[in-house]
Length: 137
Image (cartoon, rainbow, N blue to C red; front, top):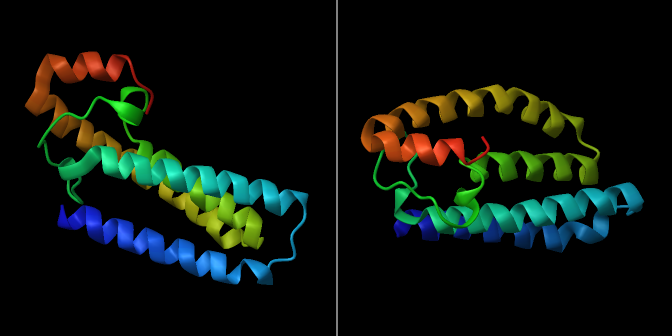
């Protein structure tokens, strides 16, 4: 529960900061599209984090196999929507360093996902194999 509150507080703080500084952006159609991508990604990231609940851990642990909500279609929605958020923000801010960060983070997140898969497969066996077969990344 404490990790949920801390995570949401950090995200909320970031959103408030962004909203307070939105007037500084010289908006055009491309930046609006980036903001829409970032906004949708942020909402889905928060939803994924809440749906993961107490199973959230920095290091791979097998507390519970979450297979509902966003996790019914995507095994790692936090990674997917985190990357989408960075892409959207890089477009809004025209900060290509953020886009480079996505390129660097993608293989690292794939590596983490494989480690998590091994832990979950060892803990949940056939149940995890069936779950994995019906989901993406």
